[in-house]
Image (cartoon, rainbow, N blue to C red; front, side):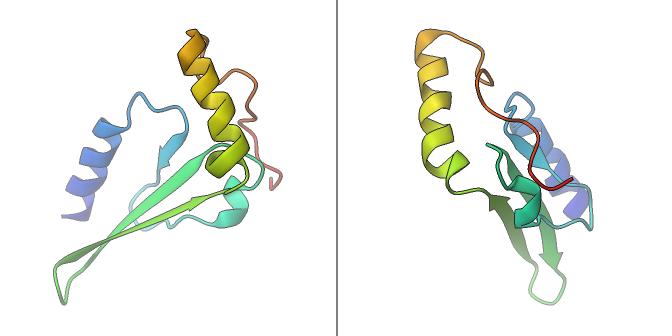
Length: 92
């Protein structure tokens, strides 16, 4: 079931340059997103309850505020969505 959900998420976010769906069994860490506009998403299914658990990590200064403003300006002006935003984090 988890692999099916990952496939669905990958299809939904296939054109979203700032969203990274992680492979099965890998969970997001905030240090990966530090200094970037990226959002990392990990998915798990609790076999006891059959509940889906979606974990995400982002840098709230970049994705949450300043980066989001630049991203919206780029979209409004018809520029590439990624223009002026870092794609590499501080953490190697």
